[in-house]
Length: 282
Image (cartoon, rainbow, N blue to C red; front, top):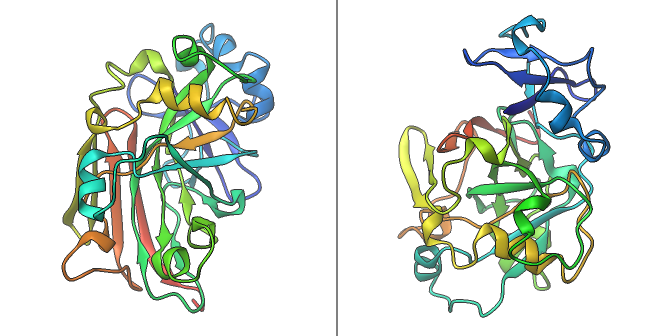
């Protein structure tokens, strides 16, 4: 199934996609889609629902991030072999982990805002993992049981903040609107192969990124297993699993996002995002 949320910021409502690609409102069944409702068995409950009888969502409604109240927003760096080559860096022996601020989260079609004093804002299409149950020290073999679903993530990054201001990467990753994800939480039964998903991203109708999850250094089950050795993963937590080649920092000459640019991105079977880049003064 494909779950979504819609409505103005702070007043989002839950929804589900029907077989005709139409969003149907779930407000009479569940208050929201978040860690609490996922932990209480939301996915199993929805399997018994006749989606065709639910109210339809108006097409003009804003589509929000598909999971509310995310607790942890974890990211993996340098996880595609071809992106590592483009970056001129060595393949890590263990996953490179960092955090994005949950305040960076925004909807899959919301504007991306250039931060004050920014000069090198970049794009990164990534596969996201949404955790489905409390997870600690899980084995790689059992890791898929901890996943509620997958989603599209744009790990927007300010490279000068990230790489030129000393310290950790977090400074370039957590700015407001730098964490759009969605449009859907897609359950694993709808995904043919975790190791063969195509990713793409365009800027102003020009293809920048093309990738496939088969080129991940560390795959989805391993990442959930690995991260759970260092922290407890809670229902609704989000893990972004790294980006393929084609980021602006890897271009020659380098290319950075500017006001008025339009970013479009997607992953096989998981949906698409579209963002306009605006100034923080707009």
